[in-house]
Figure (cartoon, rainbow, N blue to C red):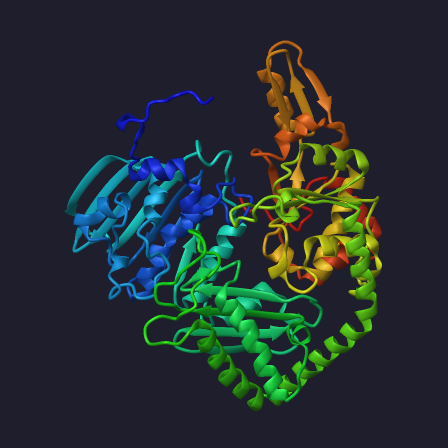
Length: 619
């Protein structure tokens, strides 16, 4: 029988704004993370501050934004109108306070809820806002949302605008670091979407004159384009389209009011439909949708009145209406693409011919592969049924509700002992394990046919559910978990080669990681320290008194399941696999998996870590 408990006024507690944000940060900025993923909280904090600067630029105030990140401190300065001096404190510390509620001032802004900078303030150990306007300057300093110091307004000769400085609270964002690659990608997207804007990041300037056309050309090797980028612009919409000569899958970059909607939404779905409909009508042939979209590389940006997103971090558009007197999102995009793309193809017969040849080639390949694909799918279903390679998570088995906020992870590992340790240690709700049998095939230079004929690649593709589109990807994080030795490094390379060859957007969209596990365990009777490098090992030996016991882990299978829980839980260390900006995918594959065996072997031996030059650390 349950014990009686008093339920009085004393049991009722009201949290103020900063307490609520700090207690439930995920409601405001999504996941926390440590900076290894592009959507980790520290980047959302930066984005929230920059969004306000972008709104100023859109309103015609300030063409330059300066950003500095050093020693975990972030400084963002715009040259807009400046926050009205009497409201400087309120704007960053009172919920539901801001200029964006006045639709006359901010008609198509991303942040309409007045939360952004308040969340940054509450989640920062140091936060300072400074506004200059009308030859006066006002400064307010906070710590964890609490006002510490307020100065001004006083006379100033500084240019008008707003400067925000903050340090994310390391009590909330543990062991975090900003990765320049992620910051730069974010900033580039801002300038692509706002031609004429200049962003100065740590002395490097980003600028674009051609919008989404620049985005496609900068993100891809233009020599791989089947035809020059088709660039179409309207009042509230911009589209860029081309097809790859070598890439198999579809690649989309979508935006709403300047926000990168990495999970797509109603606008991206409408664009995919509009593209197929327009192509069919232009060629007067009922081509299969998958043949039309195969190898497409594209981008779409729309502006919507008061957009509705499916989460606070605004990565998926839910709006069905454009707002005002405009039609639905679907109708608006269909009309624009149908009219403008059709006109372009009529005026550019060479592009139209190249596109049709590409579609017909895709059709032939699909028909040639149809028998193999059917057999491969049947094989994959049987394998999954008997759970031979994939130990799925409960989210996908239907035992746990597939909440958008649950991040699913697939560990790809090799060997019974390693896969056994991870399987026993994992969070069965959200973490799955795919077991390789030995080293996978070197897929460099092979056709898509091999994906269906090779059992491991076929089953891996089926587990990820990426045959048709990245929109159907079953796991947010794909983690390669191999031993930190020469063989483990080689397996990493072979798997990365597979993804680069057939599914490069998995890497481009930051879904692929390497699991970092400790190389050493240093312990005495009172404390155990896990070390990921020789430097950490030496520091641990100095810290622990006496003669600590030192264990060198030679493989994942040597780490007990109880210990493994520490390394794939809240303190998981993931190293993202990123593409080197200086090399095309073909150049990367040629070097790492081509015929230059001595060079490659030397490289593997000398670089037993994830970077393998696919990762470019810009610290």
